[in-house]
Length: 371
Ligand SMILES: [Zn+2]
Ligand SMILES: [Zn+2]
Image 1 (cartoon, rainbow, N blue to C red):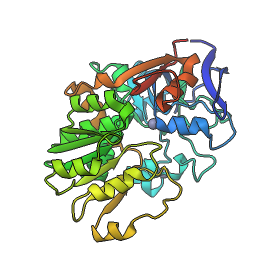
Image 2 (image 1 turned 135 degrees about the horizontal axis):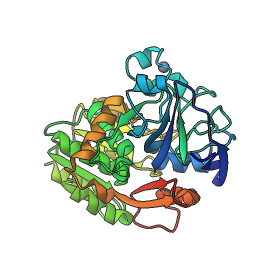
Image 3 (image 1 turned 180 degrees about the vertical axis):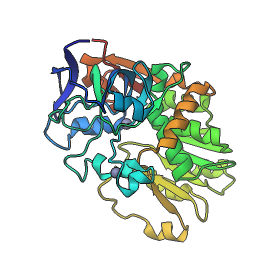
Image 4 (image 1 turned 90 degrees about the vertical axis):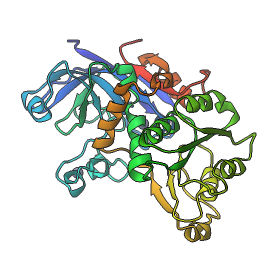
């Protein structure tokens, strides 16, 4: 095994450097992951542009790899062996608090960098912490005892498994948080990897009407939404979205709205509120805006709308995502559009953010063993 590990390190806003770290000595209850694929998402775009703290960070929080080395206790507790291929969740919970005991380690304070400066979370934690290798944009990643792993079936490529995070969010938000199920009418706003994963989750769960919206530059993504099961797609720049939604729902509106847009301001939430059915619709939101001027609280109350927050994924959602990806039931490989090597982290993040030179980008993954 190499003595040095190559990693792409975020050193400031929009700045990445390749650095070498010493190969860590793995304790009995830890392991080392040889990273094969690290997925990139919209959160990386935000964290890269405006890092929440100044310390160097190896980003990469959607990680697939092979257990290269495992301490005896780690292997026993986790039920894994060296050579096993796994999807690693980015949460690193304490497994003592009430959230962890309830299986909701995504809410654990030990993994919440927003409220805990000493939090551990893959892709977010300072590389100055012991073991250094806390993110997937590196050849190897350190796995502490409290890592959460999902074993991958042989038939599922690492490339496709790289979609496990958006797919698990799709299942968590659409099915578990918002309650999409048999015969639901759903509006999914934003046809990026997240919106397209929601489309698959809704289709698999039995939604009878799936409407996906996007902008004019999303033409190829809207086409992909159709291939993955959308019944109706709307370009909100060339058509009146509310009019079209009402037309396809016979004037009733939809049961559930899932906001998967980014950087679109208040418009998607306002459209969602108007597009929901007369009473008791569900609106799933993402916390992009710090403030929402003129929020139509009266309309929300009168329509008896339930607002749910998009907040990561549970263990079960990840297991189901891996199963969904392995099933081959949907042409999800269409989503895997761009892969880059370790020296191209900057370009890869820009590709997802839509600010680089790469076009028709849906899912971007990093292959740390390529230059
Ligand atoms: Zn992500
Ligand atoms: Zn906990």
